Length: 324
Length: 291
Image 1 (tube, each protein chain N blue to C red):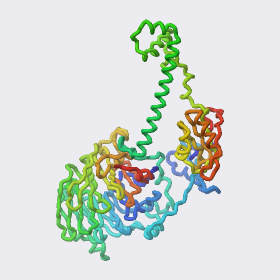
Image 2 (spheres, one colour; image 1 turned 45 degrees about the vertical axis):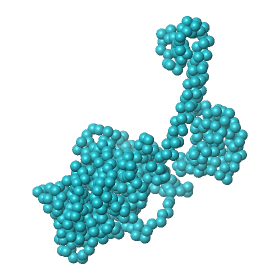
Image 3 (cartoon, rainbow over the protein chains, first blue to last red; image 1 turned 120 degrees about the vertical axis):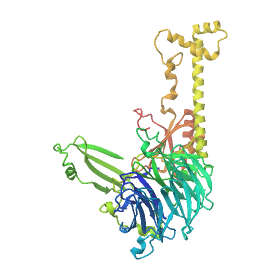
Image 4 (cartoon, one colour; image 1 turned 60 degrees about the vertical axis):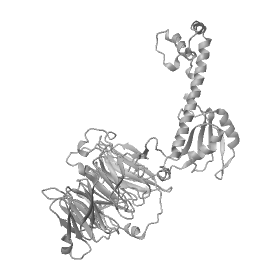
């Protein structure tokens, strides 16, 4: 495969997100412009201009009409996906670390960092209303994490919110009541990424403790553990094969004069059931910060510290090979 | 697919660091057109470090693919560009989207490769090892023959009755070592470098196959030719731009007898609606020539 290299960002990538049909890829980086791309040819469609700091997270609603971003300039913004017009800005007291739409797209969850003397909170906003006053006031604040929340996501069942953070815990919240129903400590070090399987039955966490874990959504029990020798920054589950993709590498602050081979900057493919490494995909020359599978499972995107996104379309032999 | 040529500029461009941006205006504009074969030509100009105008011509084979998508995806294809790339023309922006120059593949962990591939690789390995063992055996035979022909060697053999047979070739080395000059191992003893022809490429067992259909692949030919004997190499001639086959290929056997049998059987054989033509490959004039 000959990957497409997208060079729209000037700073390390922070998050990649496919829309539900997989024709759009949204990317955020530590520069202040979230960007949207066509996944078929890597063409840049547009940038969302308005933030004045690193953008940490992005989410898109089901019909790809709205985009929400969270930035280190203490704000989260709601955008019109097609035109890049900013519809709403929510200002907080500390940098916004992650954002997500609820599964019915009527709510937006915004989580803030535990910085500047603030605790890390998850704010719940309404976006299905016409009046901007109503939308700009949080209807609820979910607190409980003892360190910065690094990822929030809504389960497709519509009732649960899942969050994870630098305290190594994964928490389940009841959206209806705002209660923290379950808490499990999964990792000893910060969890950097949390993604759902296609069916929503499993969660995958990626942690700085060199491992990634698959959790059962219902019980939050650890089902599988994938061990590597470097911090894992991002992990994704293939929607069509029992495969798991991990992105990571030496910590950015420790990368000095080592070559790309020594830094282990490759994406790693693991077998979901056997927990064994299948292979690696090289290409980046900085630690991979974020990986995502396209919804059809035939493509994946990885974004790294060097500021490049690589879009890989799997070769046919990847699908035909037997991995048992 | 790109070729660059340095064109002499009429006068050297002398630039100040301050008007670096202005110089880009003087460059001829980028050109793009499609020729009658459907190949896309792109001509770009830039000024290199020596202040010379460089013209870069790139030729692309363009393939159109029709894909069925859902209604909402089709509607989104009409989105206009916005933000930083608002003024960019339709299509990927040259400086932003690039196709990787290297072909990246999944590097499978050893021992966990897919079975089919593993089998093939193992077989290949075995074949190579068999061939190498054969060569080693031949060489040893020859060395021994040379060694025994040597009278002094014979005497030495008689003297050292307990000497292991395998040591014979190494003792022959003493002959050449007597001169005190270093002799590379492959030239020592009775081995003549010219006697080992399998290291140099010879066309004596190569078959030229023509009138192939353009989409014949190497594995097709492998399948067609392997019943005749061990194949050393298959080369299919392809168009540089489109990657389509030109309709002929070379198949090198390790054995001339196999090649002869193959020509007998396959010349005039109907394959893929075409009648194959097999003949001895003409030795190319220069070493690397067309082969």
